[in-house]
Image 1: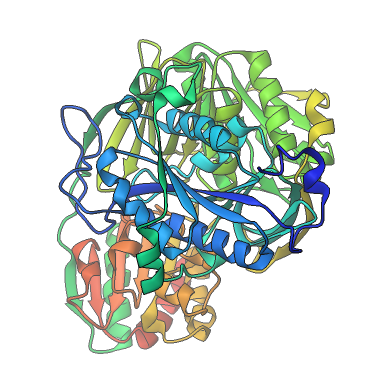
Image 2: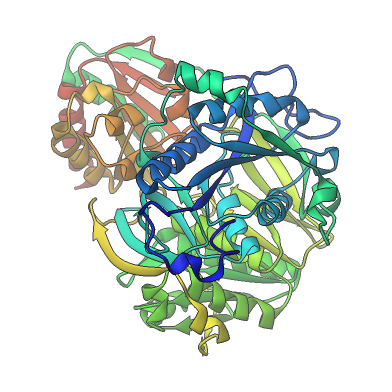
Length: 282
Length: 326
């Protein structure tokens, strides 16, 4: 049972032995960041086969934030990992379980292929409502899509308080407290559970999975979820998408750099100055 | 989609340069769509920013100085923006591609059930269909996406991608009424702390002078790079290595996990040019590197690499740029 189902339960002081916050971390499975990425010219989608799949690096920080919070709150607090992706990437989720998550839910359906930001956030919201949660934690960005829009959209579709770019996170008395990064510092904010928080990399380095964790992960559950389970009132996947990729091309190549040795400071500065002058940049 | 709405980011009665780029683009886009160009400015100082915006070719500037906007996180801004968008009808909403812009953009896109296009550097209209050009996968591909199946599209626009051009007859100012949702705001801003210089605008500086591991510590960022950046009227940035080492705050970091910039001139000082850095600055106009290693990766995407001692070159260059201004 989560706090929402428990009604007044969330008014109870958390952090004691009876704490039971249900934390769900959204995780994207992405092509290995240093791999060469290609878009299929027929489907106009990112090619996800033939490259190693990893947990989106930003989401590892979200998992770390969840596990650290669980350790602090104790009690029956749980961490569930929720992922959406092609069926063949499912086993990648074992890493999150090896890090210490209690269980995982894997939403996979051919009908979700070609989802844009709207479709991704809508499907995740329906799935998360089905799974239930007190606190959703997201990474701030995905390594492949990089729109940074899913946490914000998800907040709206879940209809819960939302806090983005948290660099620290705590739950006290049924409220989330966070420091969130701004362009030139941070804000101290708080809001009631259930809520969604996205985290930055300043939240803390993700832990390594221990050998015990890796062994234990093999026995943990990865529950499957399909489109039919979501009972979506709207068409998802490419059928419902609000944006459509028309075209893609590599950027115009840059000319090879001029490489010039500067024996001393004045010479080096003059080389740069003359170059900038020619380009009318000084 | 016929009309255009820009959301104005501002702080302490100062707005970003990108605001005026958005205002100019809003006019051009509204003309191509046959609609009107609107702006929404909220919170403390909004009226003053609205006055500045009247120098740009907008039709209406919607204003509220409601104190809730600065007291609660995002929710009041979204409620106001939603009310304006629903009143105006099908429209494209332009926000800057900054931390705050992405927050506003993603929330309002979902609130209106609209489409979302991120980090856009070009917008085209063909037979009423709006398409957005944006670099993806760290600039490795330039994509074109069209909005479909929706009355609303949200575009986060990369600073420096469009030019700002004053003009027009002065927009009408419309004072907004408090939205009905105001009783339900839930996330409170308890306090705000400024750590960095307090300046808005690394993303939109015309010149960025950026430092990396080669600087060896925090001091050269203020003693070497800041004077050079100031001489150009630009801003100081940093590589992830410098931010990770604690030499500068993360808010100055440029690259995959930091900010994306595309200034006219990017000067990389003591930066090797790892892929993680490259993706945050590769679309800059001209790229100059000062490095002790001529074979560093940065040579693959810079226009000029000067191989030498940065501690000697940078002060000399600062003097020359200063002298050229007078």
